Image (cartoon, rainbow, N blue to C red; front, side, top):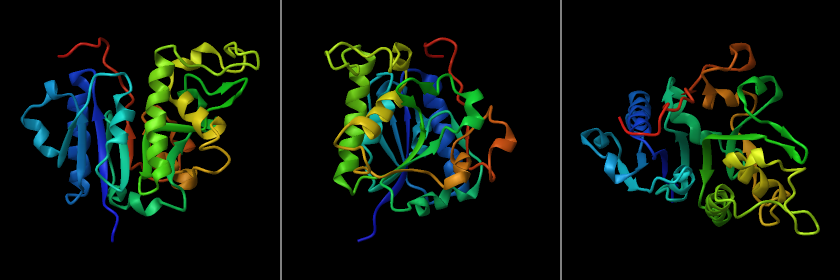
Length: 246
C-alpha cells in the first residue's frame, strides 16, 4: 500500500502565526494544488480562511506546540513547515522524493551561515540541524517515539525540570550553558546525540537534499552565495513585537 503524504503547518500563541500559516498553506497549493495540507492551530483563531487546509487539528498555546503538532500528523510521510514561511517553487511537490534511507531529515546549520544563528557552538557540542522544516516518516515506530520524546523533553527543558547532569548529579552548565535552554534545537540535539534510544545511528537523521538543503529552508537573511539552488521554502523567521492578538 502506498504511503500517505502531506504537509503540516502549526500556528499557536498569536493570531500572527495563524494568518502566516494560512498564507503558507495557500502558497503550497499555488504550486501544488493536489497537496494535502494539515493546519494545527488553536480553536480561538479559526475563521473562514481556515478552509484552505484539508485537515484541522486543535492545539494549545505552548511555546512549542509546533512539535506536539508534528506528533499528530495524519500522514505516513510528512513535510513540516514553520508558519512564517512561503513556498516559492514548484519543487515543493517533489519533497517526498528526498527520502534517502533516513527516517528524519532537517536542513543544516553550517559554519558559513553562522551569522544567522544566535547560538551554534557550545563546549559539549554544536547544533547541526534546524527545526524550521522537517521531513519525517512515521511508518517507523521509532520516529513516532522520537517526535513524542522531542516534545516532552522540550516541555521539561522549558519548564526548568530537565538539564544534563555531571557524574555527581549536578546540572552540567559548563558543557551545556543555560542559554541553550531557550532552543528546542537543544532537546533535538540531545536526543539524537546522547539518548541511547536514538543515538549512534539507531534513528537515521540526515540533511535534507544534501548541499542544496537551503532550498528547503531559505532564511531571508542568508547571503545568496552561501546557498545552492533556487529556494523552495522561503523562511521569513519574523516574530511579532508583542505576543498579543491583532
